Image (cartoon, rainbow, N blue to C red; front, side):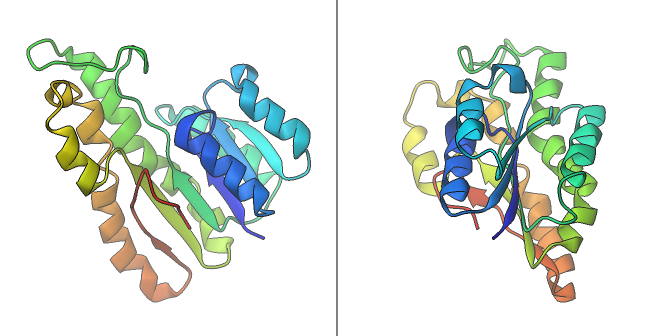
Length: 201
């Protein structure tokens, strides 16, 4: 049985990962910004009360990350898998993900980069103690598009208007490569970036 932490677990790929690991019999900590409105997670928790814990976590807020770590640590003394999945296309939400060059707001762009590029690194850093205590733990950072779908998507008229959300979602893979080479030698855990349409761990 793995102990798994998934960020951005309330919808989309994060919710799919949550369901998948629960079906495998793993212990899952599902991170999301507003647990009180995460209806599908709440339904899953009702069906998996002993194996699913919903954890409040805003990956763009250090205090929220620290509080989530304390909550997870109160349940387990180690983690086998961290899936950095949380991310945003726009500060306006998924209903309005377009940010065209020439119309970008500096503060909004920084917020997107903070959540998508810096957030995963800070989450991994905060949970390092639990990952080191886990059994051959892994950190997986989810990218927005894999190489194939990225090539196909360039033909879309909206492709160039989804920056910074699109590009910042690829950022976690770069430090992961450095962490992987630094940490694999210890035999304790490795890091591996994964595109969003592939299974993780």
